[in-house]
Amino acid sequence: MGVITKKPDLNDPVLRAKLAKGMGHNYYGEPAWPNDLLYIFPVVILGTIACNVGLAVLEPSMIGEPADPFATPLEILPEWYFFPVFQILRTVPNKLLGVLLMVSVPAGLLTVPFLENVNKFQNPFRRPVATTVFLIGTAVALWLGIGATLPIDKSLTLGLFQIQIDLEILREGGVLRMYLVRHTSKLILLDTSF
Image (cartoon, helix red, strand yellow):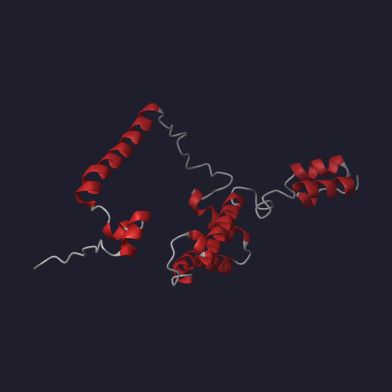
């Protein structure tokens, strides 16, 4: 059985122009064997392993305190990469809607390649729909992820409007009331007859 190879027509002016610009290397560039697979990949892989071993030897990370099965932490947080969906589940009052919104995250990610699949360009500036979806998705994920680390009352605003609330409390009741509102967890027991 013979091997079918695609030979470039180097007399073609269009191909010569592409090759002169550095385009077309995916079709007619240097072969992966033996150049990349034999010479470049081992250097990269062994270099990465050497860097990891070197960092582990020179700067070992401490494991920390042993776990106490009888002491529950004040706030249980998931791993950092689950912060955005945790924030969705935490802030939506209806838990079924929260779970559906969590399921919509991977479903939305699966639809991204189909949004602009007719566009032949790989340059992000020539793919405005996919670039816009990526930028908005990244901004929302960062906003939700940062908000998941804050208390629930500051999680959606990221604590940015706390100054406005403090000014309103100062105008209504003075410094003592602002101190009590900030430092008490039971606002119901707060006496407003100062």
